[in-house]
Amino acid sequence: MSINKTGSAIWQGGLKDGKGQVSTQSGVLKDIPYNFAQRFEGTAGSNPEELIGAAHASCYSMALSMVLGEAGLTPERIGTQATVSLEQDAGGFSITKVHLETRASIPGADEAAFQDAANKAKEGCPVSKLFNAEITLDAKLEA
Image (cartoon, rainbow, N blue to C red; front, top):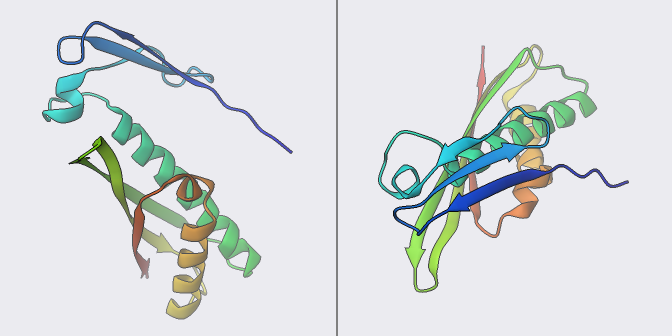
């Protein structure tokens, strides 16, 4: 089974003075602007790493829900933040790390079962499998 989803981007101009727009097949993102300053200089606005972080956080949360379900547990809430690290190296720039921070409320779950599920979800999440980067996890079970 293969499921294809499409994202697209248009870039106009040079690296530092140019600008781009990113869109998704679903239309949820449509012509969202991005540029050099938003990506590298801390100017407010979207950038590829932020979008990758959102994709990873959402994928991980769904994967954790699946793994918990397989263990007979249903989460009330899973909140995940993915921090994507972009670093300059000899070859230009690389995404070197992604740190997942998740907080979950799961009735009936004990800490050991939760940590096991959290790590299985980190390894099994399709977006995690995409990265050639270190992926770390800080998972906490909330009361």
